[in-house]
Structures are given as structure tokens and as C-alpha cells.
Amino acid sequence: MNDEKMKSLEEIRGRIDNVDQKMKQLFLERMELSDAVAELKAGGEMPVYQPGREKEMLERLAVSVEPRFQEAYIRFLKGILTISKDYQNEKLRKLQGNTEE
Image 1 (cartoon, helix red, strand yellow):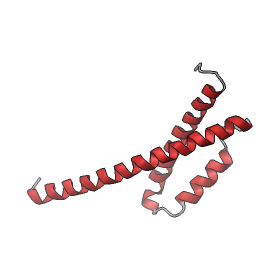
Image 2 (cartoon, one colour):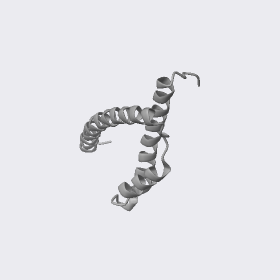
Image 3 (cartoon, one colour):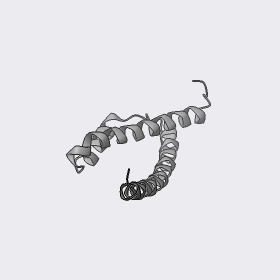
Image 4 (cartoon, helix red, strand yellow):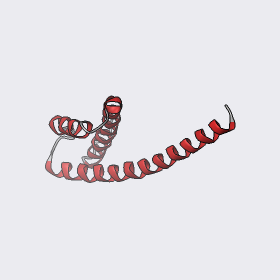
């Protein structure tokens, strides 16, 4: 790879690192909110998984994404939702005193 391409690659990677730092902060903020949702659901005996809400959210957010990225974005969101649901389920088990797997 020539010097010009290497410099360009390093620049792009630097920008990716920046985006990753922002996503980290947003992820942590989202998990804090997930924690708060779990607390509320524990008090009201509400289920963690609410398929209607999840479907609506995926449709609403994906509609404005460029078609070439839409499928990947939906997978990204589903991954975040899975992490959030797993976290909430674990939190509810702990709040209910059931730490068994």
C-alpha cells in the first residue's frame, strides 16, 4: 500500500475510532435506561419482551435508513435489543431473588 493510501486508511480508522467512542457512550446511556425500565417492570409484573413495541421500533427506525445499509442496521438494532432484554431478564431474576440459570 502506498503512503497516500496508508494515510487515508489511518484517517478513516481514526474517524471510526471516534464513532466507536460515541457509540460506547450512547450504549452505556441506553443500558442505564434499560436498567430503569427493568426496575419499573419489576414493580408492575410486566414482561421484558414486548413484540409489538419491538416491531414498531424496528420499522420506525429502519424506514429512514439507506436501502444499502437497512438490513445491516436492523441486525444492529436487534443485537442491541437482545443485549437489553438479556440484561433486563437478569436484573429481574436478581430483584426477585432468583439467581439460578
